[in-house]
Length: 348
Image (cartoon, rainbow, N blue to C red; front, top):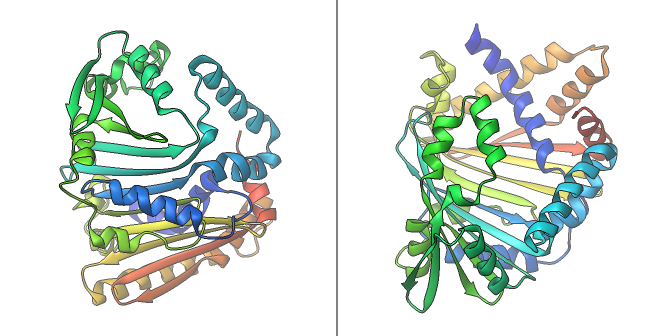
């Protein structure tokens, strides 16, 4: 039963999850794409890569979408203002970010992640490094990598005590305690670019001995001004991690070798695109049929719905488009601004 419910709701979850990245007007031209490509080119070998247009998200996207939920917008902006006051850093001045992550192991429940973020924007990296040393409470150490000085400190030194208290209440204390014993590294790449992450990934970034694979870079969105893009390899046996039975659904999920996606925004609303790449064309055809069957079932469930929220879910499923090309199965969803407003208004 759990497997069947998962199958019927997966498509809707794909649609609803996209709300977190809804945004505003598209910026014309390819300057943002060039900036993201430059940062990705600096990343070391990674299993997952993501890029974000920070300035567009905070400057255009977030205010537009959250206009339908003014209390939440005020709360988010309030937190940003407090962080700026306490640290002297306004993250809204960043232009773009690229993140690379290495996955250690294939079991999602036990997987460790080493990540690095490269951030570029109108900000003084000297001030950021000064803040990093202050956050380390004097316990940081310095390491020279090439011509750059890297500042290394424990992650736990920069986490507010209230975070660990909340984690203890939610059962995450053990995991968080393990993570907070890890060391973080930060350095200035140039006058407007900061590199921060695990020590090994920062070292790999500065050494330039490896790079992101062409498979992942080719799967990143090439649209002019995506607010968010990602591409990554899928761990093995993902279905079993979620407790799915060894049936058609789990086999289709485990056939996926890579995932990629993007979120584009404009006056029309938003468009979310997710692509799964399987090992063979036959597997892609099987997974595509599964998604089509799920879409058909979802349409049947919500057809004739009376409740406004169910009608909304029905429109999301109706608007979802599934396409196959060789080993790739793509799901594209366009959400009109009116429906974006309705989705955001549901958030409490």
